[in-house]
Length: 265
Image (cartoon, rainbow, N blue to C red):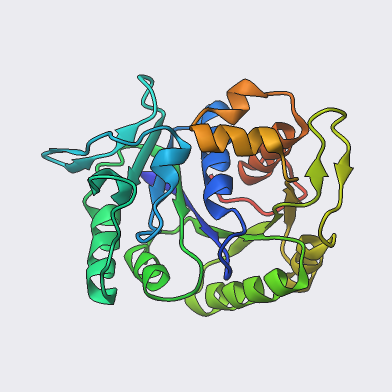
């Protein structure tokens, strides 16, 4: 972890808000912006990152420095680690108690040869329990670590994400900003965005927490289809409004937009 310059935790107090999709698109956008990126999946009971990146069936190998992560292509600019690579098939369940989960997460953070990374994006499960505490404890001493909070517009979801903000405050993890996912429906024909749920929950949460609002991501059928197929959404639809939103988030996080908080370079 000493060679990892910046760590971004993707958090939410609630399940089903799209943390894994956001994590994959953020990591891919950072890579496309010229950064060397790692993506760590610590959702041990629901490891969806291998499927989202079409990496199912790939194997993890060992070297003298530890486990070698799985690379998405021959450029080796996006490396991935997930317990999904250690399972026989996607239907195999992880039935572990807390101590075994903690040991696996610590091993992912300490025994994986992440090499020289500009960013390590960590996809987390919902809540504020064992997995989150293990990540925070393993990252103690890392001077450049922050969290992104993902919510949907509804008040119930926003209320749950506030608890995650409390977790960050109590553990000393700075919040880099808030993302509002599933913010309206992007019509695949005319690209007009229609609000299916309520609107503005993410902006209100960012204002309440006094942290930057990073952007709104609509429900995009093209993104959903690419996620199901494991294809690269940003390569397939680089000029879509959703792709542009992720590019804007990366500009903010990498420090090219002075209107928001970013990780130190």
